Amino acid sequence: MDTIGIMAGSGQFPFLVARGAHSDGQRVVICGFHGNTDPALAAEADKFSMIHLGQLGALIDFFKQNGVSKACMAGAISKPGALDLKPDFRAAKLIFKLAGNKGDDAILRAVAGELSSEGISMVRPDDLVPALRSPAGILGRVRLDPDTASDVRYGYGIAKAVGSLDIGQCVVVRSGMVIAVEGIEGTDAAIARGGELGGAGSTVVKVLKPDQDQRLDLPSIGARTIELLARYKMACLAFDAEGTLFFDREIALAAADKHGIAVVGLPKDAGKFLLEISP
Picture 1 (cartoon, helix red, strand yellow):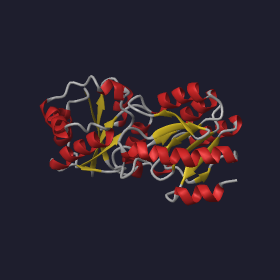
Picture 2: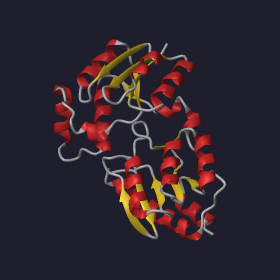
Picture 3: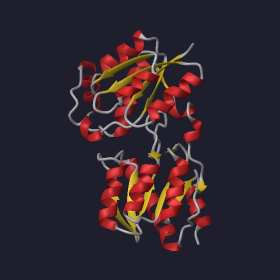
């Protein structure tokens, strides 16, 4: 029997990944993080441990002691909280190697490298719950009007540029202007800030960062995302369909239709797709 190690953050994703792994006949070893992981997740694990962020040595030791040969990351980690981490010796050495580049991708790739050096390979968590992957296309009943379509095209290019700098995955735009850019606060906070500044008619665009390692950090949306857009009377949520996790899709799309929000999953050739659906 294969054993998979799950580095678990917050939300429902680690629960779903654990259940998917068990359904696939795998033994599940979960390492959670104080202040991020729901302790109830222990019920989904064959072995469970809770550690503090920055205890990289403890994480690797726990996985090795329990026969983990492959691992994945599932669930959100509070990025502002991560600023206060107290790294152990192994984590401190890794952070020192990163020098000035401590963006999400750089840190996650470095952690994956440490695991690999111990014989633990990284796998994509969504392979265990493929139904969460979003399809491409206009997913609800609301179509794009000309102004919104233009904002999606503009916002997509900006979001990719921001992502290439390893800053964030999401931007809020309106009338060809950038209203908010996601930083360390995360997508929900960026949307809320964009809604407060841009108001009704704003568009949210969330993308994969260029060359993003999809084993390590998948963008996600869900019913909570639509609730935020509805609160600020936003016009559209557009996102890279490839690799994006869409939680509670049926509930989210029903809410989007109710509030007149267009939901657009952008395929790999997003530029061509946007031209084809432009009014």
